[in-house]
Image (cartoon, rainbow, N blue to C red; front, side, top):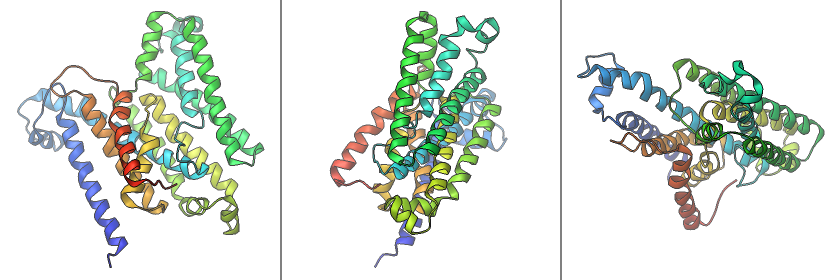
Length: 344
């Protein structure tokens, strides 16, 4: 008989090796191809054939790869948490309306810049300005959802409330877009495409700190999450504080989704599909295994999508939002049709 623990260890080892390989491939690809040997030398502060290669790696491609890992892992874990909490395979990190709140914050900054004054307008086209606006929008929606969570006991009601917040923010964005100029609409459209590049090391540091805070919260609720898979009544009978678990899950998901959307824009597919892909790969619903597995799998898929979006040996870059859906959705459809079963 095959030892399942040993099997999981082998799968994790394979995933980690794949992640490391994809990271170096991702860094090597782009408008300028850089040999893998030169990447190693650059990272080890060695002598590189071209000094420009070292600058490209350290100032652009390495930060972008780190961002891809954080974004892929964070959205994937958020999707897993939402699917477990709501016991709904179609739930994702954006069902609470947090991403919509972030989008509304950026929309008000960019599309409403003409009404906010010249000082505010100057920040509308900077990464920090858009990140702060998105964070404020996400925090306001989070506050509203948490207030609703206190008043509402039914978990499904919270899901519906989150979806309604998403509809409300979409309506406000549509009104702002109607009265905006072509230049403002273009700027907002570019942000909505999503982007993993153009983040400074300071911005990546802020993204990383919030990411680790969100992940740390998840660690404390692994066992309660396993109990929730069988329903809230079963979890209560096992001594689980359902309300506390629900609140921690909402806060963790909101932190991860909010900060990722703030710095990278709304990125589709990853949070919804990667948990399913990982469950099919590991054939388990145990969150002790799934959480690290989903994090690594999400990072790998995000890096692959980014590598495709770069259009190697071309100066053009495709929207990462489009690539994540075009590349990932057919794979998930094929897997689900082949397996004819999903876990949640």
